[in-house]
Amino acid sequence: PKRTPVVAGCSVLYFLMAQPLRITLAGGAEGKAVAAAVALAFVGFAVAALGDLQKSLTKAIRGSDHLVTGGIFRFLRHPNYTGEVFGWTASTVAAFCTGGAPVGLVAAALGWVGIMFVLAGEASIGLEKKQKDKYGGTPEYESWVKRSWAGPMFDPKGGN
Image 1 (cartoon, one colour):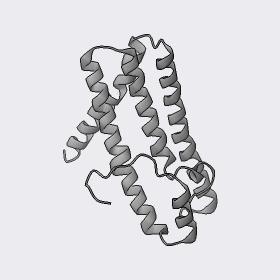
Image 2: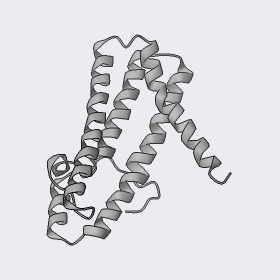
Image 3: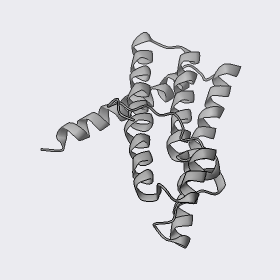
């Protein structure tokens, strides 16, 4: 009962996030713009998966407190979130390039806004703070922050 609103909210978000796929498939997924958007979506999700795999393997070998700064993390501090942002954005673009009923496109846009709030807002801001609290002040962390990109971020609470 206490978790019902969270579960219901997540269910609605997932339903809305799947709308671009339904629109793109129903529209025949034809045209160069749609093909490019679908390809970029796959690339984004592949980056996210690669980031997860690399982080899991590195921490399994070097320990859970190890700061992962090599490989894809050399360029992206949060490849999972960054990849997902690009993946969900490209998927939504594919749906809009395909067309479809206005209500479906509105649902797709709402799903995109919802997942951006989660990924670029709450999740990445929280991870930036967590990493700074844990590793901040160390030469490795400070160097990594200067040379890598945190990905698209906004603070929904208006803080820094």
